[in-house]
Image (cartoon, rainbow, N blue to C red):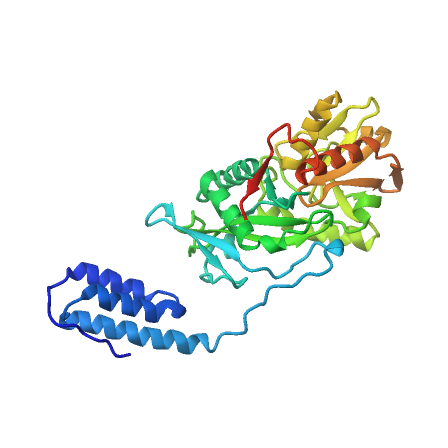
Length: 416
């Protein structure tokens, strides 16, 4: 708490002193003492009475921060993984996450920070808590045979998030910042990228929330953009390889026409929780939604796009503004076209489904999970052939893991 004062040399600029004092006052506790020493050296003079008071206040703040830190709960320790071959799809503590903050005062994002603890503090009237101002993305990092770490087509994730930000009147995240944040999070957690050959990947979750306080429905004055990472295996576990049994969900709708179904808003997924619970209680692994107007045209599975190989051998997938555009689906369509398979994004009448050769569910988390059956009321339609869709999934994963040529330029190395 004692500040050494050097002999009088010159009168420093008072605004500079205040700024330096503020910087020291809000520095992390671990660096507060160093900040004081640096500030004292920078002054190199006998400060005025106000400056001395500022320095004393900084010293008191340092003592208070140290006192409060002693009252914090124990930090969540990063996991130490030994069994990489049996990763599930759940929470595993890692080294930390990346966080950026946007303020209406500056209309810009800050420089970001790496945060070790998996917690954030929000105002009780934050827009995300009351009005669901939340968007998220899903992407992955992969370990290649040579040990390098690569990410997959993040520019598409950035564009999709900003499409959602426009729809929910949220601050857009510049693509350069989006990529910077993901690279930062991956590098800081590089040891959690599963080793090549394990079949696992590092799941990357960029998300954008309205963190500023509002009472009436209006745009938020502040936002947080964060990126967390978790090592994962298959979303559906072992069942993802053997086939999922789905049920047509006609008691509930996933999204309304002209609603938010086409963006990756958190509320879209919350709406599926009860239908999915009902489906699982009946013995099914996932839900399939039809359009909410006629209950006739195929839309999406619970968390995945619907894809199929039609009776004529075409790659078919529903096209609708209320369906989330899957980046994995886009890549599978490109690979199908490379093989000379006709690709048809279009309306799909559910009456076509029983005649399809193959049906699958695709997305970042699932890649492509075969659908073994779809039950519609008393009718059950079985699918036992997954040859084409499995070949496309295998080809995509070979590109992602660095085993096959990346002809489309989807992959990018992250220097770790």
